[in-house]
Length: 181
Image 1: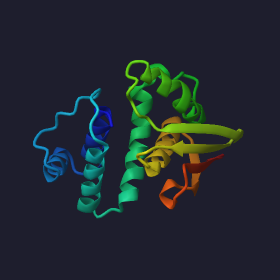
Image 2: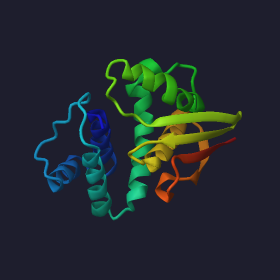
Image 3: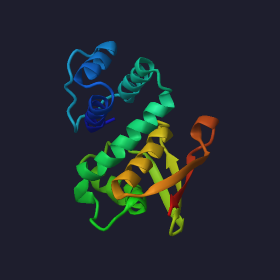
Image 4: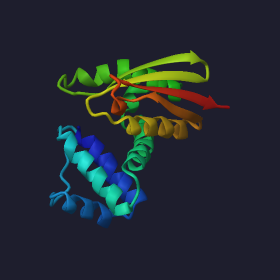
């Protein structure tokens, strides 16, 4: 996972869960003495998972809840961080539709060793979308949070329902998204 995700995680912890002291405590609990994540360097996925699990335990919040909340925070950050790939007239469904194809493809042209999730998004109506999520990381709670965060960024609300999950043995997750009018 790229260091930019660790930057988002650091900012999330600092802003929402106790500040810099909490972040330093999470790092220390995971054997990291300093916060030296380079945004474009790749780090083991297990490292971000360990930090999230430690946060879950320290905050006494279910792990899945931490992942979704982090995803919601990250969704808002992604639009700003990757603004050169997001068109100004887009809203949530547009970003999701283009994440798997255009945005990930554009990012991979600079580093083809990246392993972003494979996302297939299809609108079934103006206010409904079906997303199929394929990833060895199996971080579907983060994706659901990202959808919420994108909605918050664009002033939209959604009902999000996972109808199929890799954690239940399926080859991919299927997530139904219904816009609330």
